[in-house]
Amino acid sequence: MARTQPVERWETDFDVLDAGYIADPFSVWDRLRGTCPIAHTERRGSTWLPTRYEDVVALAHDVEHFSSQKIAVIPLDGDEPEEPVLAYGLPPISADPPLHTWTRRLLLPWFSHRRVEGYEGLTRTLCAGLVDSFASDGRVDAAGRYAQQIPVRVIAHVLGVPPEMADTFTGWVRDVLEFADDPERRARGGDALLDFFVAEVARRKTEPGEDLLSELLATEVDGAPMDEAIVLGTAALVLIAGVDTTWSAIGSSLWHLAGHPDDRRRLVAEPELMPLAVEELLRAYSPVTMARVVVEDTEFQGCPMHAGDKVLMNFPGANRDPAAFEDADRVVLDRALNRHVAFGSGIHRCAGSNLARMELRVALEEWLRRIPEFHLADDAEVTWAGGQVRGPRSLPVVLS
Image 1 (cartoon, rainbow, N blue to C red):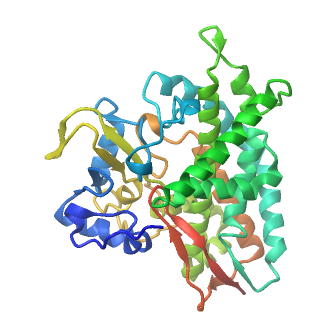
Image 2: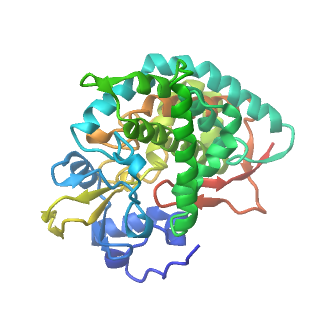
């Protein structure tokens, strides 16, 4: 992977792949809010980074000036690849209205409160089995052996694809999202994922099931079957967006609890706090940053943005803004007023938020039920991924 040049001035030359930023973006956001709330860089093309809650929300709601057709925080070779079989991108997240509107409407029933309740038993059994497999080991990588194992299997169930391919799916998703400065690896992972879904679509035409992929293939739009490029893009989105984001949230939450024994013991003693704690952990460790592309020359908060510029939807930074949240840099497990934007804001707010919340809640409940005492290993380094999705990729903990 190529090494990036060190940052000398964050206001005018920020880099979201800087090792220090990935390890501790919080201090960078605090600095920028006081000096340059919307930073700019020319690395990998002209890009803007808002750090205030009100600005991020305003940008997310302005679909007229800021398009979602290019959502990658780090473009591949300067731009998203042109792939004919994905002519519509990854709808609805990479689409503007009207395509966004009806493709999102198709997904919502699969992630409704009622539907998610039906996935909870599967998720709880999975989490319990995973913890039981290492609870007596005395030490475990909580990211690799737990957090990363949960969402990929749940999403495989939703899509009707083989759960035994979970490790393969995990590798593809990591290739696509984590290796921003390795275009060959990103392309290889994306091609493999796409080839898999092309084959699955062909199989479902003769062997349909009761799953999301089969339903998409059976859906008609204006009296005709849905374009297969839209089916493929939507299926790829569900896998990519439903896996890395949630395992990052689970891993970050376990990282916090491993390093904050008072919070951990309070959750064990007061399990009824879990719903509020889940929202607070999502706020404090929001994993996802998305991008928008400027449609035409415009000015936002005094910043002259030009057509083709990228704007990073810095939802994690917005959630740490002290103007929007009291004690923004402190995790308050019972925080009652919590209008966080961990799942985005506006028309592109995450359609799978109910599923992500359930998976995070159940993952923490089952872990704490079996392992109430644990702490970070002193002799091992926690490693983090950054860019599009921030979360721990290696999380060595000692089980007490």
